[in-house]
Image (cartoon, rainbow, N blue to C red):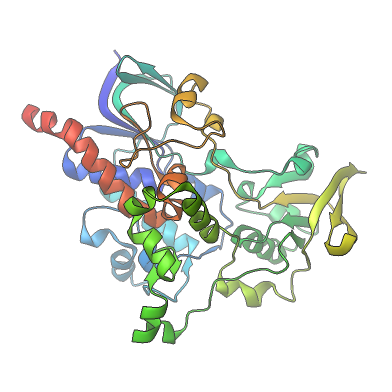
Length: 406
């Protein structure tokens, strides 16, 4: 017999788990699918240090003891709201506790298909089970949206990869590895490669690697807080606006939205990585990859620099730390007939101010909402806005009938 639910959440990362925690607290009938936190546990370099401050590294639940701060104190681990970098392993342990405490019902199976059935949705799971959901929330994160530059995609698959494929890099010991990119993914991965005995070489269009500002006690003075107030996505009044007023951001002209997104999404590494990589990892900066070909089982890169300068770089493997590009057309479980109704021509989702797509009762949260609500949605801290807002909307739709039934 086909099962049914009021709400189906597709994805069990920070945004999916946070929404589920809020729905559970409201008594809304839901099911959540996906292996919890797989992007963080399987696709981030091990030993990575998070760039986000402690106060902005919470999964969201309507409970004061659900924060990373409260969990760290119970575990006796060092914690500070700002200025103390958070090891990935600590965050993963916190997220595992959060999931078991607030979302024990998560089902670690992927969704293979979503189709519309009248006013409802039919979901097919990879296990073969089917169910009917009155509403679906896409909390798909970034896993499906890796960006591999076209010039590298022509290389044999054995010679090139995306940074997301490398939690561990032990297989590259003794190998020459080109890392393309200037952000934290590139820098963190290059350092991990170096630690594992590989010979990394960073290649980036930027003239220099940008690092987040080193924490300064003066930032917390009265003058510092006035000049550069702290927010979950960075310091400054523009960042504060994007972090604290996403509904106002929603109503900005598209040109202003784009400017704000670009200013927050530029590549930057954690401040604590500068001393580890500068003077240690060779870099070709201010260069673009003008050519890439396989030659005798290795890769030959042709780099083009300023004033027509060129450089040749031979390596055993190329890793593209080139980020992600949101495109709903790349979700394998969504038929293109649905995608055409919920996204722009480039695959960018169209969302209301309650995260609903043009198809009633189909929602999208997390990075999928970046173009709608701004850079806040690209960060974990965005769940603190999205989860209660979407949960409130779903409670109004389904919660009252559930309470009557109870």
